[in-house]
Length: 174
Image (cartoon, rainbow, N blue to C red; front, side, top):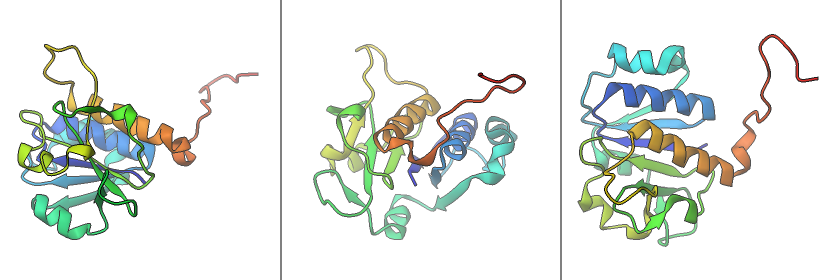
């Protein structure tokens, strides 16, 4: 099961939308505090719709608490066993589609205003990935970025049992 980690998210809608994507993909959502909103915020629930109660949600006091609760984590280029922690950042040298995601990996995204702290990024440069954009574009919306990387990780792992066939609501595909 993929793990999506939000490091100090600030906008409730983004967290709700990412939570909904996690439910749709069978991924877990990990929230690292402080958050820029109250978790029971109506905007979180609105964006997550009626999926929020189905979400596999984990919460942490801070980044150190997250690491302490997941000692099995390794980093790209720093170990072959266990799930890896990847850092999605506009500052990375490698593209998200150029790395190999494992089925139990952790995909971390930073807060909307500043991303993942550079003090974390510089310790693991080979674990940092970016989504290509034109040079003068600062970033994509957090929920869009998460969806892009989540689905690439799922694609690389044969979509891990997700229903790949679409069904019409009222008619059939005959």
